[in-house]
Amino acid sequence: MDVLTWPSTPFDRRDLEALGATESQLRRALRTGEVRTVLRGVFVAAHATDTLELRAEAVAKVVRDHHVLTDRTAAWLHGVDAHVFAEHDVVPPIETCALRGHQPSARPGVDGRTRDLLPEDVMSLNGLRVTTPLRTALDLGCCLRRREAYAVLNAIARMHGLSRDDYLRAIPRYRRRRGVLQLRELTLLVDPRIESERESWVLLAICDAGLPLPEPQYWIEVEGVPTFRLDFAYPRLRICVEYDGVEGHERTPEQAQHDAARRKWLREHGWRVIVVRKGDFGRDSLDPWLSELRGLLVPAYTNRRW
Figure 1 (cartoon, rainbow, N blue to C red):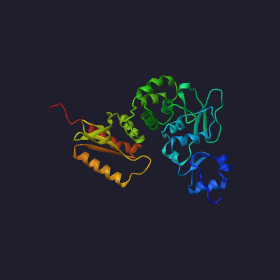
Figure 2 (cartoon, rainbow, N blue to C red):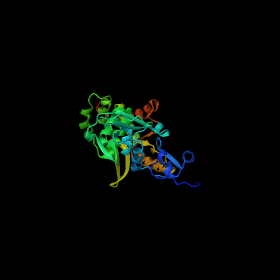
Figure 3 (cartoon, rainbow, N blue to C red):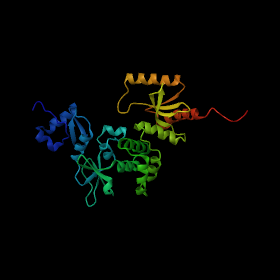
Figure 4 (cartoon, rainbow, N blue to C red):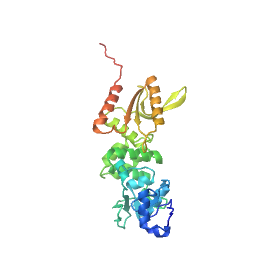
């Protein structure tokens, strides 16, 4: 056929005949960008909007009913992308565990494991068994690397109305589990007000440097009207720390101009502004802005007489 309309709902190779398509047409559509890969072996028309419902339909194509979706796949279905930047160039595996009495999946593209889950750890989401937001956050708090784990704990708390206390009440179940020490430490820092992964990284770096923790999402009022919202602020000292990045896409010239004008206003009104950029989280690039912050936090007042 000369013209083929690819569906906006997920399909796999078993559906090609019903679609009136061939394997070669699918390969060509992938090359030309008409079709994109959602998961390994699952595809959708390129124009289809990435929704949680679409993700669930895609996952349903590759898992069995007795499997529970866990870890980063569960987080993805709950609206939090816990995959690191480099993984977006490949199709990550579906992470599942088998319910008691069943074998874990050995299907290519599926990371099948076993795990002890209580009934309250599992929920139904668009017809799929998936670990709850609480269970998903705690599992990832144990198994991800520290920065990514902290960002996920904040993101799931923010999106699903969870609190630090919700996490702390559940942690005793994780006694002796690998990674529980990291989970317990990070949970004490959880703050649902933090709005992005890199903002979580900024706060964690400040904590690790032994510095006082700032207040997230602080509003500055102008003539009684909340006008400027700061990523992190020490209001009494008039110090703010801003993450300079738009995650997921590049900043537009308009956004850059707006940020520059905003920070100019802050400095003119007595605020000292530290800007943290996308590349400022490596070992060598952390020290400059943390040292600047440390210097600003030294109080000017002293009760010593000279």
